[in-house]
Length: 280
Image (cartoon, rainbow, N blue to C red; front, top):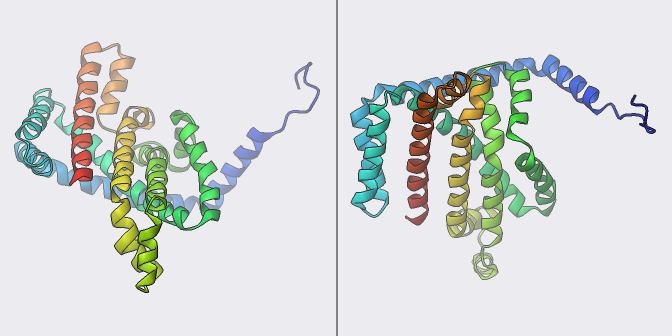
């Protein structure tokens, strides 16, 4: 105890350490199962992306961007040019690894986040419970997420995905909750007057009206997942983040810049595609 400390220090750190140890002891089998499932999911997605020839994937992605942007030729050209630059920089394999991690973590975060957002929108108690948890998740430094991820899942892609899921989930929950709560009262009353059940009202009225707001949450979730790639590389996650980290460690300015540029290109492409999905 410090000399000038009158009140004894609360052993908060010791309590958390004990809780983590007990959790790992009794639920280690569950963490192993989760790790195996996520690892298979990510590996399968990466194999699929890497199986497609780069030029074919570039054409498909550019065509998708062109189509959902109301056939804007400039969008398709910019997407193709950005991906061609990544291919020219010899960063295609790392980019596919990064894309597999981002897609995997985003899908899992949305599978969890959207139902939680719906639950919070339909229950005041759930909203009061989730609000402080989301505040904590969004204000916690991103590096802190790496500690429990490493303790429970070791090093590699899986703990990086777990940390990314926690970091990227709050916008999906918040904006799903907000979108459904902003549905006009009149529409809910009309649905009730026609005898719609709670599920029918949710599926046929509330979700379609709230979809632009929900899609904005999906957009933010994807971009936050991508922003975690460099941080997740510190615990062994593969991809462009590892190239950036290596560039920092070796003071390789050129290599770090190229990897950072590839991350920016992927971020812009994902942002444009998801934003156009909101409008369509």
